[in-house]
Image (cartoon, rainbow, N blue to C red; front, top):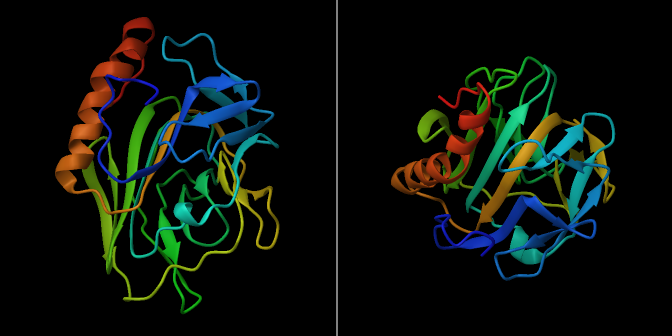
Length: 231
């Protein structure tokens, strides 16, 4: 684990600490060896916790295809980030499968593509530019939900169908194209600190505990050095 003090629930199959790039890569601290390759994103050295800056033009991190990274009906995605402008931000995902993103007006807009070839997306709260957010997206069988800073933001029922995946990479800071293995859509102008993927649905209690631990170990250091709200 990259930070012995950081609480991580069971079932983590991808753990990218964007504070600690190594020779152009992000090491996968889950133990599964799915290291991310950095394309253009730069390390922000100003914040105490650091993280990668994505320019919203062509920066992204690519995590190569691995079947372990394709959970089906039970999955959770956790991400810590700050948006720099208003746009459709692709934060983590691929063209199909599960995706964490915003709408074009910065509303949280997570969802899943199922085997009836339809997207199911939740429309959540507006995310302010310049504010740090901890977001967790969960699929628990026929229910999907998104949490913001430890609290439930939105949820909806979905059909009991398999998740659709291509044999494409996951991307951080953008979304892969429909039939290509590199970022093509929704480049995010943002700072991203942490991405974790789980092969099971996290409970509301686990989501809350993740946020509280990150708030204590990471977010308070940011607030101490500049006026950033993490509410």
